Length: 478
Length: 138
Image 1: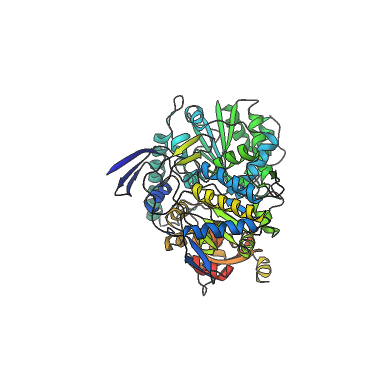
Image 2: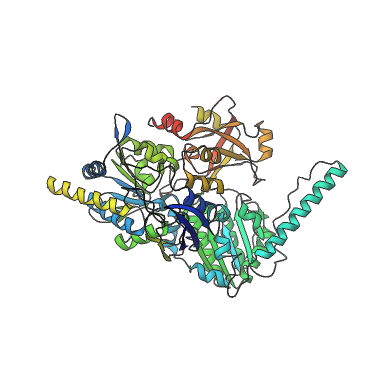
């Protein structure tokens, strides 16, 4: 059995780079240090694979040769007037670079999953800028960590342990020990309460315990605050939890902006939270030495969208008049930051780039995937490393399926089941190498830990073949 | 019409999002029964379930202006959140999401007005059946 160390996990934007993968006879047997999602990927990657290229004939997907699938894909893209090339966030930067070349060649739109994730964050950052940093700085220095509209316990399971409250920094201690003690105390208290209820034969107490200490008694050491519409698992481990009414984040952020500028609010509550609590929170924000606000899609997908992010970034700016404060989006897919970065260095724009006029044109709301599909404009789609049939609203999926659909993906997904051409690829970060960008824009090398199934190529190689074939077809046409 | 009629009833705010179970099962394979069990669900506040006379683990129809879908009713561990229901990301939740982006590129995938009704005699479609039913392909 061989061991591959320092493996970068190709699942979420945290890109944990300390995995140890034990391999025997080209099979992964054990994964150490990974979260549940990372372990599931490394142990389950061999299941639900598409082994050969497929082409739809008489409404059935049937096996085909790679050359046939490449030819069919190239013919679809070369004859389309406005093809959509979508996905990209679960593949390598090298493949994304090739995809942009292909989009330019076919005069299509290239958009990545940012468009239904942190697209509004990018719009806002382009409007008002961002004060950010790397995760390493936060690990060592941040004494106040806020997750707003983000549930790292579920979506980025090792984020808190590696980069924030539970990490052992040079200047900040881990709060893990305190959390364990607090959990034990809470469990004991619950057991005692249940016993007392049984003895006195009263109804179980329905009153929930508040999360952690009241804000008026700030604890020493690193503080973890969660703001969300539900009491998520992340909220359970936070020192303070504020439950905001759905769709009211903008009001809450703006109210905090007023409070950190020492202005008064002439209402009793904002977004369901009493103003006294907000005043205490403002004191905690101002009182920290080095604060970080992580925000998730709870802000970008809710009412207000990019305006919510404007308010969050503006709050950070206001706080920097009082103390040191930074802000960072919690990026989801493992290389969505890479998709933005590669797209920006190649075209000038991070997503939703339209090449139909022969030059890159960017106008989210017009050139973004959902809007193009809403207007029924795309006349062919190439989907790579993504599953829009499962995750796009129904009306947009219906339009994708009205036109030819090419899918490049290692796995069988709802989108690959619907495709006209399926080209299976080797799994990036498991079977082939590549580069990915962590959520703080640090590039990391993805490793190859096993050989891919016979005949499967990397995304980059498949795209290169399609590109060459498209060029031949276009030359013939000319 | 069913969607419009149902929306005149009790309103909920529908949120979608990740859960750790959805995250793990999507990595194992989206055509598995485990994925269906972790994703084709709707988490409700227990008090709302009592008021709506919806039993835990029974089938439930979630209706929005964009459509409707049958999923399993689950008592929320993240309570209290009266008036708010939650579905994990996946093919079932996507069927009731609106595609309108308000010109931002981003559809509203959280905070969608919705109603719920018991769907005791109805089946939860698996991925293949769902694709056949709604998109006519398999």
